[in-house]
Amino acid sequence: MSVAAPGRLALAVVWFALSAAGLVGTWAFNIAFFADPGGLSYLEGWFANAASSSAAVDVIVVALAACVFMMAEGARLGWIRWVWVLVPLSFAIAIAFTFPLFLGLRELALRRRAGTRDTRPAGATPARGSSAA
Figure 1 (tube, one colour):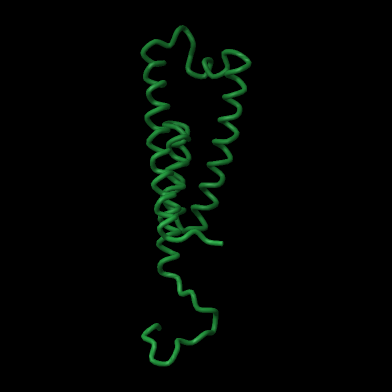
Figure 2 (cartoon, rainbow, N blue to C red; figure 1 turned 135 degrees about the horizontal axis):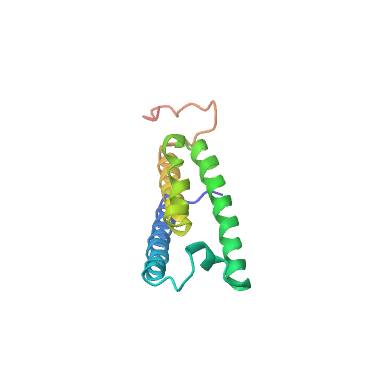
């Protein structure tokens, strides 16, 4: 079952909102950390205790999976020339920013494709008097 074009647009808006939240949310804490690192390096902070280490491994594994997905899906959509830029940005900025951004752009692309797709069965011809090609 496919999502209708208006549904795809709404979903894209959700992805873009999450992307903005990911950018603002992560960088608010990054700026606070760099203003007062508390004696730890950035990566030391990720692994300061068992709880933060668990969260760090969780984020790292999801980030790697998201990067693989972005590259594979980007290639499928014909975006291979630029989608690779999102991988380093995922680690330099935040995966919480780049992955929802990718998903929002993907929804818009799928919406465009759905709008231009001929829905007639393969080999079907237009009805007599129809202007459809």
